[in-house]
Figure 1 (cartoon, rainbow over the protein chains, first blue to last red):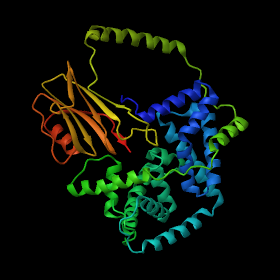
Figure 2 (cartoon, each protein chain N blue to C red; figure 1 turned 45 degrees about the vertical axis):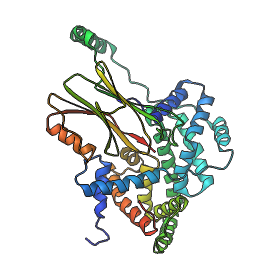
Figure 3 (tube, each protein chain N blue to C red; figure 1 turned 135 degrees about the horizontal axis):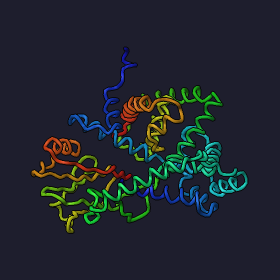
Figure 4 (cartoon, rainbow over the protein chains, first blue to last red; figure 1 turned 30 degrees about the vertical axis):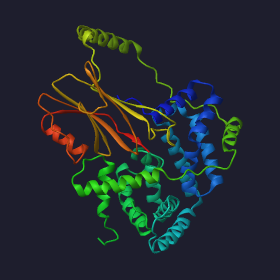
Length: 191
Length: 224
């Protein structure tokens, strides 16, 4: 069996501390270690800092409450991202305004894409271009791409939340990435 | 099917990449590299930090609202007697089988570990500058340890200055000096091993297997 990577070792340590150690210290460590990433996973779906922070807090509380149900302690970080993602998707579904809003954003971003390519983009501009191109994807594609490559979830973990098949999500990611590449290249980003 | 419905030709390349399938052509290799860089950029997107004081607010809310911990489902009543009988039989059988071999406990065929030299990256994983340490057991006439970064060979033992031979073990310490996917493999055969080729890890593994070599590998280490 492979030795745990550094990230997995941190996951294991915090998992063990949460199960057996000083609860207050373990909870604080979990918050410090994963807070920003969990917040970002939620923010990228909700586009609202206050609600993203709320989701982050609820994610940690749920994780603490149900830590004994985590099957693979080496995936603690991914598990937290998965909880945050599911909570954020629930919020979007409940509000129902998400699709209309995202479609409007996507249309704006697509029209931006027609702008002439820029030369020598700075890394800040490139990041901004990537954010815009992600926004131009359909919500389903964006969620799959971010879940896979930003939140580092396996397809099985992505599928567990949505009830879709892992293969469906893999195909969706396969289709989204060329769109993302073309959008970036139109904006002058070299890959 | 309209052009709009038809998947982009790169979609299949991304899918193959995600399924960890071997590269089929030079063109696919180049296309994969583009998407690996894009994946890296998505992973490196800026973190969106919550408003100052977020850590305290998270902890305070937990102290205020924490519910009792939910434990995994309690185990069902277990029929201990039949299990104990089976365990006893299995233990005796294992002792009979294992005792004669206690003297020749072997090193694992391949061991890979990361030695951290600085703080971890944002995801808590290996960072640029960390050291990859790989050991292979040498138990035959032709054994090699090879390390690849993004499919490209970066070290080969024996032969590289960084390689060390210690009894039945061959090892290397390699500084991971850039982002990428680092993979160590062990090749072993009774015949001379095929040399590495310019087309990278997947082709080397296939070629070696075709020539009857055994290949051991560990999951890749991703440095961001």
